[in-house]
Image 1 (cartoon, rainbow, N blue to C red):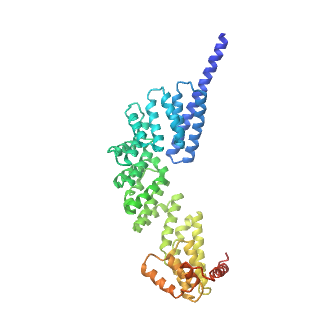
Image 2: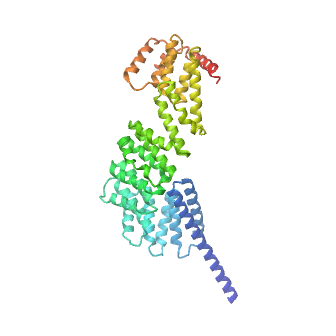
Image 3: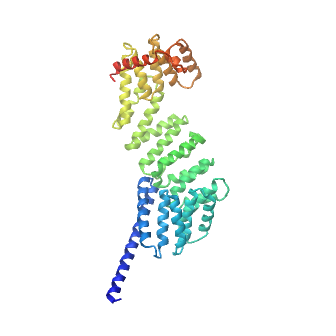
Length: 444
């Protein structure tokens, strides 16, 4: 071969190598970006990134299968497939990566992610064995080691077979890049294994991690599960430091609202309103949510129109929100139709249905249904009003027994018979006439 030909061959090889390494570098950069999206809870962006990594690394693998760094390409491909949920493909790629890895220290890290795929495929024992072998190698990076300890702790804690499981989880939680995943897993497993103090520690660590605020929705779901197990008061105590967290203000405000909800469920309404009022004094999404929350609490307990109307100043600053606007319109309608009730008695029935269905004010709705049944007891729809009042009555047996007693006077009503599982004649005709009468009143 001439020197020119040799030079051309060498230049082509160099160009091919540069293209190959550029592809690998870009794929690794895309993978890290996808990981950042995953840590931040931006799942759709993360999945899009992983898919792009899969495409690039698959192209690189097909174009450079004899390269000395093919193990790293397969390792990156397998990790992206694992994150994307392609578990069988990930296991194949990572198994091949282990066989072809030539770089020092790469093989034990491959074993960690291969164990992740096996664990998600239901092969826990094999995964734990691989993790033990990988963790024995001192060359494993901090992030990979933390991921391995997180997985091993989670697997061993399923049946509490390893005394060191919590140690693994705690150690994983101190490594940036894995700390949020570890914190969420520690919180989840603390709830599952009935360990409220460990849940307190896990939650405190999450609140102290600025980026964990991006996982607020997941944390809120876990806290509701904890409240179902330990009660809202206990979980409210776990959240007592939420106001001092290092999260961004919007996330901190939303977590304070979770605390307010728990306080309200626990019966501490003063603390609940106090916490929600602080958040509601601010602007933005959290402030709107706080105002809607306070309005909902007041409406659910409102016994008369005056109490219901007290939510108007709470909602008006959030009036641009469609939910707040809908509540304000419903409140106007209830007030208007209630005012018509003395002249057109069915207007009270209309007001009661709006209070129940659109305003979320069951106690007020009960009073309006009873007002209609009392003022027009012989009307064919009075039994329907009594049944509706019974349906929204609180779980106080005496009150419900009183309403059942009143319904006995209407035992032959098509509505009462239908409520008892019968198919009475005249029921459909009554419903059609009622719908027409209500449309005449409401104009809808």
